[in-house]
Structure formats: structure tokens, C-alpha cells
Length: 311
Image (tube, rainbow, N blue to C red; front, side, top):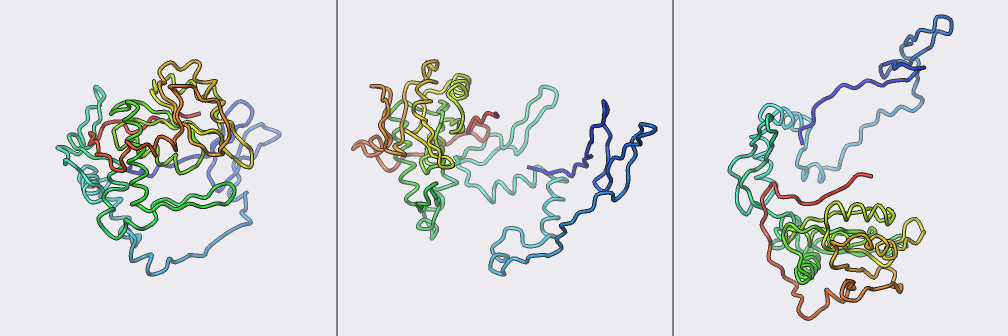
């Protein structure tokens, strides 16, 4: 993303009109004439900080950008030569199964914008697979801490196996490239695993915040046309139990596109399971026919990765 320096004005609302003022002045109302004026430096900050914290040398040596001069040069090039800049960044930072034909192709009259046209890659390969041949495969890729303080660590290698097995579960239930998968999970490792598994086979995932109601879940499933829902028996948020499966069941009454529901046993509580529709996550990934390897689905650079709705 190219960040542009955009000036902004703070706006104070007085009566029925807006009064713009700068960061070092405040609006003052003339009680007699009713006009608004500004009083420079009227707001004094009582908390000021001038310290500069220098990073350790080992951090500086490993940083992609080590000085402000390097950053300013990168920024200058991103503005003056965006196609050359982003082409170099994409080639340096990502693995491409097939390199693109053009970095940027656009037409503002149609309108149409395409990045890295003709290029093929996969997010999961870039996140996991490319690290498996070197020293990083046994390093931590994901560290999770529960509400209760328990921790779980996954290396790149172990995360690869988890993602591949669940990707094969998705394929077993008929999910393929372009299909939508709704994810209604708390902040647990299976959330990241589900996202990466979908990306591995070219499926489009749509995360629904686990604090949302059944109605909000229903609306998002209906809009994206999800074929599968991944949820959990319960979630735990701030010490409060969230009955995710129960909420999902209510939503699914009005979601005919959903053919399969995968349920993570987060709290190991008893929940209603619809025969031939609902399946336990742990049972599915442990099935004898589920391999811990799954071929990559190489996708176009412009293929959708996920759908994320605002609230």
C-alpha cells in the first residue's frame, strides 16, 4: 500500500455549523457577538515525551529497513515509480509459481484495476511451505495463549501438517476452489488453521466475529453463499461463555446453502449435532483417509482470498 501524506483538520461542531481549527488552537466562542475565534496554543499538553528508544544492534541488523534514510528512499520510489517498486517488492518478498505478465493494468473509465496480472501464487505456500526446507521449519510459527493462561506452540512443520490435514477434510466434504467457507470461531489455533486450509485449496473464507449474534451470522452466510460453516461448541471471552454452536444452529435455519458444519470441541461440552451435516473437527482430522500432505492450488493473483464484512 502506498501511503500518501494527507493533511487533516480537526472539526469542532458549534450550534449548527462546523468550525475548523488546527491542532495547536481551540475554538473559543465570543458570547457577545456569537462568532467563533481560535486561540493559539490554548490547549497545553501535560504529558510530553522526548525519549528516543534505540533498538538493540541485533534487531537493527536483521531489520528490512535499518535507517530512516532507507525508509524515505523506499517511500520516494513507491510514489515516483509504483509499478517498479511493487514489482520488486513482490518478487523479493513472495514466492510465485508463475511470475506475472504485468504489475499493474488499469482503466479508470470502465473502471478496472488488476495487480500482477497473469501471476500465480498461494498464500499458504508463502506462509508455511517455503520455510520447510531450511532452519525455520522447527521454529515457532504460531504461539497461542488461552483465556485461562494455557499456551500452545506450533512450529512451521507441525502447522503444515495441521493445515494440510484440515485442507483434506475440506476437500473430503466437497469444498473446492472458489467455494465460500464461513468461520465462526473464538481466538483458538483452529481459526488460523481453518483460514490457511481454505487458502491452500483456493476456497474463500469469511470470518464472522465470535461475539456476533445468530442474526449477524445468518446475514453473512446468506450474503456470501457459504457451503460450509466452521464453528465451536463454545467460546470463552473475558471469562464469559459464548454458546457458539447454539447460535450457529439458530442461524442455519435460514441458511440453505450450508451443507456441512465442522465443530471444534473447544470446551468439550455437549451440543446438538445434526446427523449428516455436523461433524466434530477432531474426529475428521484423525480419520484414516486424511493425509497430512495436501497439494497446493495455485491461484491467480487477483483471485479472492477472503470476504470480510464490517459491523
